[in-house]
Image (cartoon, rainbow, N blue to C red; front, side):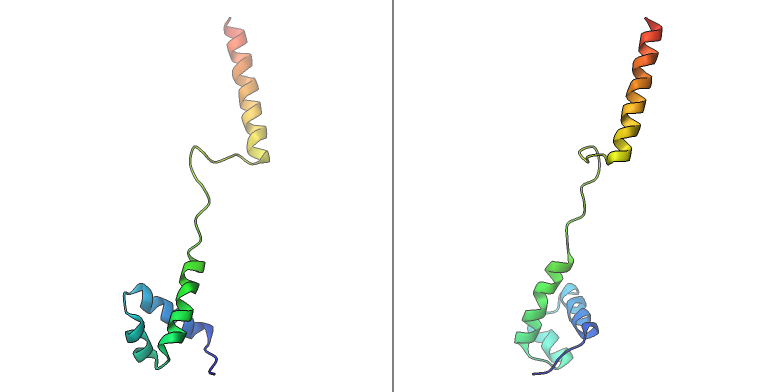
Amino acid sequence: MLIYSNERRLEVLKAYAAGLTTWEIALQFQCSESWVRQVKPELRDQEKPAPPSGVNEFPSGLQWQIVFKLQSQINRISLCRN
């Protein structure tokens, strides 16, 4: 059994992303179709979901401290106006 380098695996994944079929990739890289199919799940593993962003994101500890300081300043301003 041949051992292929990570560079070869990346080339195969790029070929998948370009829309080539398993058979075409195997011909291009002179390897078996079964090996190409084994590499394909690695593409899904690399596509990890991004962390949430926007309004629904929870603030970190430092961000909470800033939020509390701002909230207390807003409360003081509103008390001074009354």
